[in-house]
Every structure is written in structure tokens, then in C-alpha cells.
Length: 284
Image (cartoon, rainbow, N blue to C red; front, side):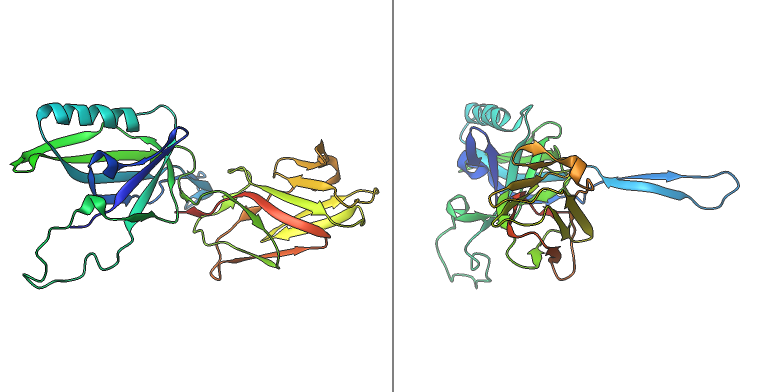
């Protein structure tokens, strides 16, 4: 039997479904759905592709549990409704068993003790989903045994914002001529709020450029940049020491794009430290 788990993360804290004595056996995420704008022109063969975008992703969670009585079952349903049915989006993360030997083949009689799958240690997968519930929580009675009333469950979630798996945000320092990006989907500053922070470590010319991937940002001012000056490049706005300086820029935004070598090239003549704030990798 495959045993995984689901971590629920909200502002009020986090909890796993196994803590409700639910045995999760399947977490299946769909490919992100697409919306394509195709247009036709009279007397012209074919279509004009006017753009496309990813819309949402559906995550199915299925498993089973035992209830000692109908009262225990009703209480469990109430607890799960309180946890999962929420107007505010929250994060869910697939949990993987740490013990790789758990599912190795055994000959009959090699072991005599049953595995308690609810007590096996798990670790979170590399990305999570920001979701809301999609439809009702489904419970199905499947019989009675010495362990109690046996139920199967199926829960569906739909991504609430970005239609991708997301790594946990972090601050990334750019100390070389490239950025390591393991994601499989583009991450644009116009779609997700990440920021480039530049801090000058010496007095320098008021003109510099920063190229990340295929995008080049430029700043040009007759006033020299002083040591300690802080630039925040947000895609839709650039500030210097907290003051908007869009008029001195080419108003460019950056996009973290997947590459076969998983390295995004970086080139700049800015003298100082460069960081990406709220750095996240997206997975289709």
C-alpha cells in the first residue's frame, strides 16, 4: 500500500491529514489548464495565435480511514470541513515517506508485524500549491471490520492564484554570472511579486544596466550613485532609497525562464550586492 501525507498550511498554523488518522494513498495534480486566444480572418486559411496563458491546476487527494462509530465519523467530517472548506486560500504540500526501504519486496513470513503507516516519518516535497477547495469533500462507506467502520475519501483542490507548484519564498543572493533556476514554468515580475534589490558598495556612475536572461534593465542619471544607495526593481516600479525613479529607467521587468542547463545568465556593471527578494520557482 502506498502511503503519503498532505500538509495543510494556514496563517494559524499547519497540520497533516495523518493527524486526523487519515491514510492518504494518492495525491494527483493535473497539468495546468490553458486559455488560448485564436482568431480567424475572413478569406484567410488557418488561425492567428493571439496569445495563451495558463489558468489553473486541479489537485486530487484520495485515501481512507476508520471510524470507531457513526458519531466518530460525523465528528471527523466536521473537523475536516472546518479545516479544508475555507474562503481564504491556503497551501497544501505533498509529504513523501523518508524511509526508502518501506516498499521493498518481502517474501511471505519475512516479517510478522504490521506496519503502522500513520506513524511513518515523512518530508515535504520540493514545492507546494496555493489552493481553495473545489467542490464537496466526498466520503464513501466501504464496510465494517474489527478496526471499525471503513471509509474512503476524495478531496479536490484548485489553485487559487498561480497555476503552478511553488517553492517556499526565499532571499537569493546573486554572487556569480548566473542564477540557478530549477523550475519548469516562467516566473514573471508582472505575475508574481518578486523584487531585485541592489545595494551600492562604492560611489559610481549614475548609469548602469542589469541583464537577467533575455531582459535588460537600464538606469541613467547624471547624479552619481553613492555607497549605500538602495535600488528596488519591482517590474512595475523602480525606487532609489524609497523614491520612485521610473523616469530614469527603461521600465523593464524580469522573467525567470526555464533553461536546459537550469542556469539563467546575469550580466551587470553595477558595483555592489544584488539579491532577489521573494524568490520562488514555479513547476507546471
